[in-house]
Image (cartoon, rainbow, N blue to C red):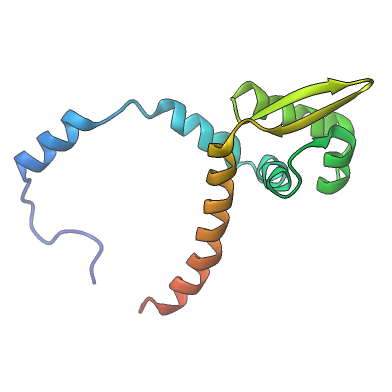
Length: 123
């Protein structure tokens, strides 16, 4: 199958309907940009496994310094993807809500299945 139309025929009613319902997706793009970094995605995924983790444990999981982990966690927190709390001298992080959990786990599932589906698509 060719990836482009062989003729140019715009369907005005379809275009108008979609344009009338389009949302501002700039914040969604920023969310995906935050998760597009593999280190931050690994942190988010780790927080789907263990609901709350201290910075030191997260650093150990991703194989980085606590400063690097802290930088990425702050980035996630500033974009509303993670939240933090201080307990004594340690800072603990968790995902901000179930939406973030679902985004990360669904994306992971899709990626796993995508590899299977790609094998089924003829060239």
